[in-house]
Image 1 (cartoon, rainbow, N blue to C red):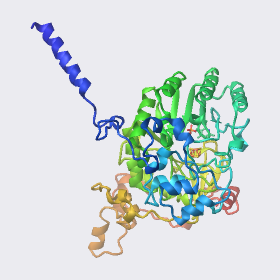
Image 2 (cartoon, helix red, strand yellow):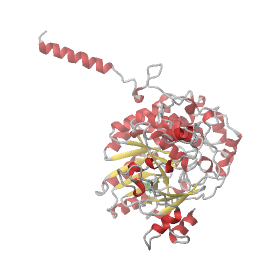
Image 3 (tube, rainbow, N blue to C red):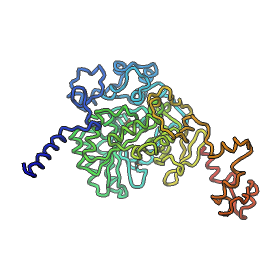
Amino acid sequence: MDATEILKSNAAAVAAADAAWVNPRDPAKALGADGLPLRSRRAPKWKDIPNEQWDDWRWQLSNRVNTLEEIGEILELTDDEREGLSAEGKFRVDITPYFVSLIDPKDPNDPIRRQVIPVGSEQQAFTAMMEDSLGEDRHSPVPGLVHRYPDRVLMLVTTQCASYCRYCTRSRIVGDPTQNFNSKDHEAQLDYLRRTPQVRDVLISGGDGLTLAPKLFEKILRGLRDIPHIEIIRIGSRVPVFMPQRIDDELCEMMAKYHPLWMNLHFNHAQEITPEVSRAVDKLTRAGIPVGNQSVLLAGVNDCVHIMRKLVHKLVENRIRPYYIYQCDLVEGSGHFRTPVGKGLEIIEGLRGHTSGYAVPTFVIDSPGGGGKIPVMPNYLISYSDHKVVLRNYEGYISTYEEPEYYTRHDASKCVDCRGARPEPGQEGVFGLLAGHEMWIEPKGHAEIHSRGNTEAHRLQDPSKWQPLGIGGAVEGSVGAPLKVLTASAAAQDLPSGTEERPREGEPTAAAHGELL
Ligand SMILES: *Cc1c(COP(=O)(O)O)cnc(C)c1O
Ligand code: SF4
């Protein structure tokens, strides 16, 4: 063999080895014991359905379960669930065979179950509950189009979903076929967009656009792409979660024609990310669609740092970028899902820095009354009482979020994710305070002062602690010079005349605050 031949045969050997190699870490390539792509469990009710039918999204849609009898065949229902399923006027129940099969039939606290099976307490009203808590109807110039932000709109193209989430923020219209949008509505929406050049970003949602007939859905995408000022199209969909079978090659090829197109999915718990979902998301990303995720913070489903950490890790493993965690909206039916705002802050604190920045979403409250999504961060959080959070949005619009009156605290002793959590050595800090290992943190040297028997010692009375920083008028370099300590009244006298140290009682801002809280 000469040199070229050797090179050629080496290249062939490398190619052959490459072809045989399957990345064992890629969740979209997972194989079952039979050597075929891994499948998640299927309820016995459908054990004789051929895979071909099971994998057909139209079959999944037309075989959804919704009655107490049907669901009772699949799950061991509790009295609470029987009550929920028999309630008159309840929000629509419908669950794909694929999704209901993921539920552990014996576990009433199964996180997937809690999202789709109603319970009796769903009917309970609560303080500040609203029908249209985000004021969407007030911001709709034409039916189904919510124009709340300057440069982007929410376009509701249908009221139908593949399955129905008990906490749905649009339960006032979602699931109701008599309130559905039709081609005429889509045309009116497109017409508004043609006349509104400041809109550069359209978010298609509903309901769920991916439940529409494929031709109709494409017609909407085409209509949007015929408008030159629309830069990006986003699709918000839970279809890949409820019915990953819908994400077929045909759909991906069709969507790829309308780039730039982004997608946001909605996973709330790691158990929703099955092998079927991994393959579906793999198809979406191969079609060039960046995929994000939004979760809703739900008591009894994901109100736990460890559960959330597992979810975001599984998301990034599947190339899904966690985008938002939403505080549960003040909408009918969601009372028993609500958590205090502090729970979301605690979760973000348990993620940021502890794990990849890619895995950290933004925690937002969609502001009651319609101010848009507000990140829960100090510069947006104006005030906080024991039952209300006062928030401002990017425009200065101020709204309040009423905290839940009742919250059954997450029970770490019963949570497998909490028990299995690996401690991070040396990372006690504030995390330790929140978790309850410590009651306080002492500044360095604090304990020594006390151990010397000087119980009166306080860092304020040790001027050397203050000198290096030059705080309080001390001159740098004059270490040891006594610090002038002001009392509150002396401080007030020291202020230049005409300056007030605080807003007086009854001033407009203070009064407004009092009312909001
Ligand atoms: C969520 C939402 C958007 C998009 O908001 P982003 O923060 O840009 O993701 C746009 N319009 C409405 C009405 C929305 O609710
Ligand atoms: S998928 Fe979205 S719109 Fe549909 S029921 Fe769930 S939360 Fe509501």
